[in-house]
Image (cartoon, rainbow, N blue to C red; front, top):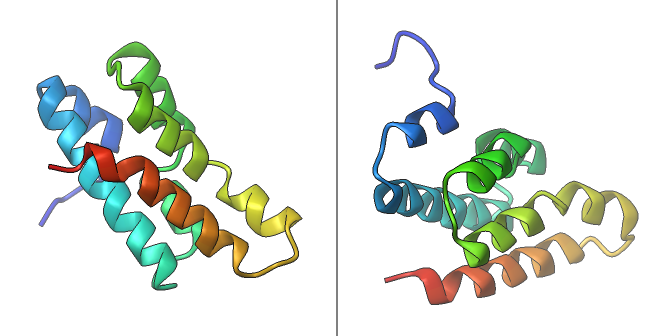
Length: 106
């Protein structure tokens, strides 16, 4: 067990780019699945992966437009939930993110 929390970006910065990309892809896929199953909230998803710190990491370190696009879409889920009246729209947005991630999976 860790004695203190380590920000994800700090962990990713210690990894090779391909390993960092794999960690991001794994986390993003898992978080989207949990959102669809309603086992985590959008706020929790933002705390885990869909946040500005990770977007800045992409800008500085990781050149992967497709994965970055999925991240940017995930960062908009709060707006989707707040602005769209249909409760199914968050689930539809998660399906869109999965479709963006699918070609990146091994």
